[in-house]
Image (cartoon, rainbow, N blue to C red; front, side, top):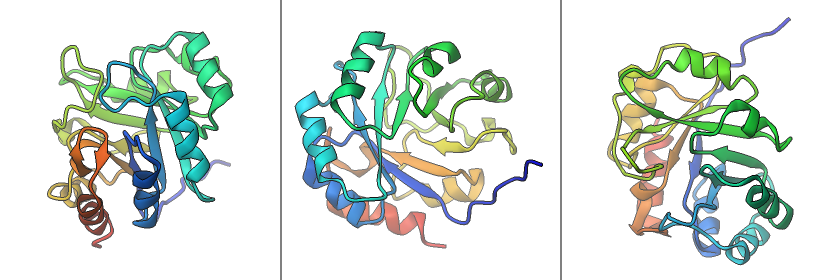
Length: 212
């Protein structure tokens, strides 16, 4: 018999990591996961060599997530062959079949519009480990720093929710209180410049996440 699991704390993923020192600082401050962007148009994109150096520096019990946006299958396979990734994140218009085709655990990002049917998304991506909810901006895959209307999230979804989109130390506590997500995902909200994380901002963010 299936039983609903109650999570006693909110997990944190710090995405858009480009340097091993930033990854280690994020982990030292309590991050559960780091995100590596394999999407060339992004200012936070990493090369295979960068990714390998970052992954090599990671201690035990930290998940490494690889982010892809409408990537060619050969590219995804080349990355996963060269870099140890614990989880794939599909942040484009990938179908459930595409996401499942790699045979690896994955999360699916959904860019929220006013008419997005998240209940249907949860059904469509039933194999996903979670749905990552981000802000929809025309022509941009993500990382805009903009917040979407959290009231668009149904109070109960048949998938863990990872809340993203414009989170920072000033709003993450309110976001957690209102949405009660499984995890939060931050990138630009803890940066000094695109792709360079700020230790003080990361520390302030983590303090707010665990304020309760």
